Length: 185
Image (tube, rainbow, N blue to C red; front, top):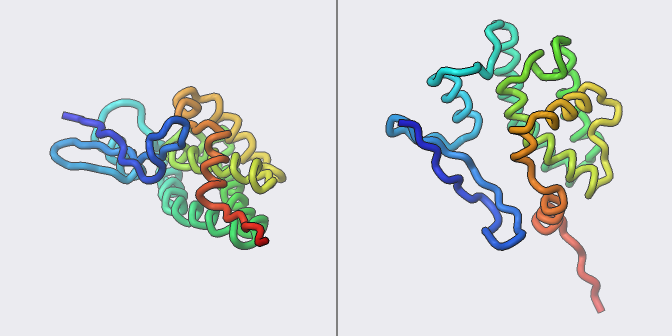
């Protein structure tokens, strides 16, 4: 029996209008999986249906490289805000731009929609909004493949239905991460 569990809240409280971030969980054969990438790989390996990774071994290897990079990417995004945003975040987005150039089959990372796109979608979508609205940094400037990828992802209903409201996301980010100096009298 496959059972999706209610997400575990990792920040925010369920107050009216407040952003709430949750971690998805899955229970199957008495095993609980709570890490997003592990959950997606488990579904890929244990259930029938459209595959999230291509059969091509070179694309599978590249997928593993990109999936391993997700933690580095996210850490870089958060630390870049306190450092040199253009240099630090820019190099991480340049890495993704180069990755998107590897397979010309389509605008997706592996030349087709895959687990890699699912893994990066929420992060890139979130950082695009925050960096543009709060920090006035356009992550797609000089990165046409990344811009095309974002455009294609936004055409996928299953993806757009999971996106946070941009206004609430920016408000949440400002409250949680930006320190506003207080005026002293």
